[in-house]
Amino acid sequence: MTTLLNIITHIIIIAGIIAILGFIIRMIQKGSGKLERLIRVFAVIAGFLIYFTIRVIGLSIPVLVVNLLKSTETLPFRLLAIVLPALIGILVAWYCLDAMRRQADLPARVVILISTFILTLFIDVYVAVFSISTGAQLGSNLLPNLAFVIGLSLFVIFNVKRRSS
Image 1 (cartoon, helix red, strand yellow):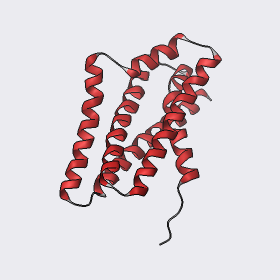
Image 2: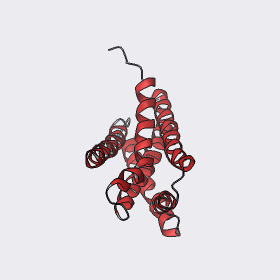
Image 3: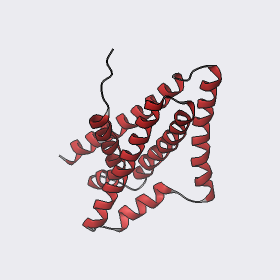
Image 4: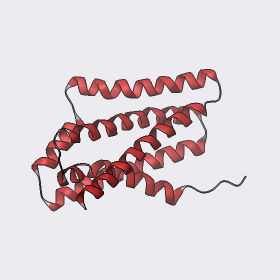
């Protein structure tokens, strides 16, 4: 049963990574012209560079998350490890949907920048978990990523209205 849950967890997280990447690509393609699409590509590059600059400075969010999840077994912390990423997912989804409604260039660029940063962080946490986890521990260490995907998905599911065609 644990193996099945781990497989489902991986599928959900990988689907989340693919969805965020697809969202970024779609936002770049929606640029109003060649220059705007190029600026949006620069936003992707900047998102990666910001994340890796933070890593070079010595601040590693994945290492922090993995160490905290390894060192604590208390229920309140586990709840915090689930609730905080879910809230961040909801906030990111809210900002992305709001920016898409405005259909302006600057909010779209910011969304691409933030989405790229989050995608890089998300992948980094996912990879970092493999360095310390085996078996049942793997699923619990992936809770922050899973909670982020769930929060983001639930916000989008309940807040996106169908456009009339």
